[in-house]
Image (tube, rainbow, N blue to C red; front, side, top):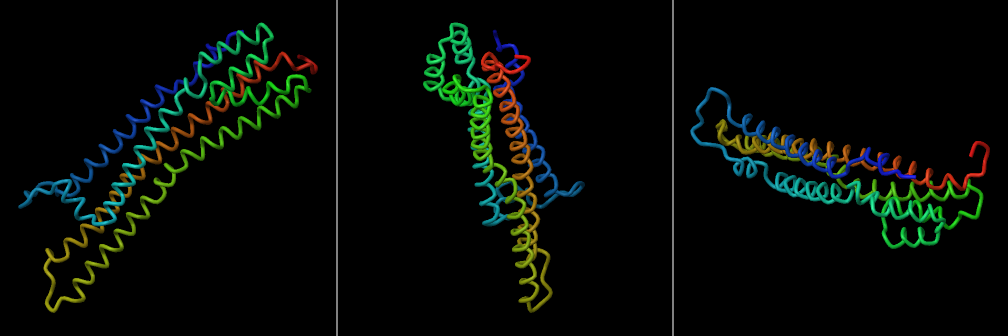
Length: 254
């Protein structure tokens, strides 16, 4: 019994490359939009507005958003590597366990699972000690182990979702702070304020909103892709474990 062909449905390495390419593309497009928006079409500005100038205009909130963006990218890279298929479902472990099952060496299979921790090994290690019990007990133990592993993986990527959720709110906070500053200039000015006097506050207000969205959109995409990988791996591992353990099912139709 060989399950390697069935397991080829999920390609962790390819998913990770697609994930990184998506994040880079979205960030590049949105970042370019910020620069284009900062320089009106058809006008020749007296001074060139650089990316650094835009970051300065965003103030402290902009710095926080940049830090969150860096943290989100680091988490995405880390989890993208950890959620590769050959990490969740090691092909060498599967081949080894299959060969041990063919010789009815279940203790050896359990030792192999314990020596090579992974999503697959955790599920199999939960069911193997119960092979002398009814098949329902084996199935229940594997389901519980699979749910625990899946929940732990979802918990790890939840920080990416958190960054995606709070970034727009931080951008809105920067918008409010910038507008408050702009109105303060108007309120405290003894004469009619010049547009230049209001530009800093208004620029901060608009820029932080954009930066918040630039951080949030790629992080939302990252979280969705990683979550899909975890959900797919859960289904695959469950199917593999059930097929391996099916020989212990003595029920009708077994």
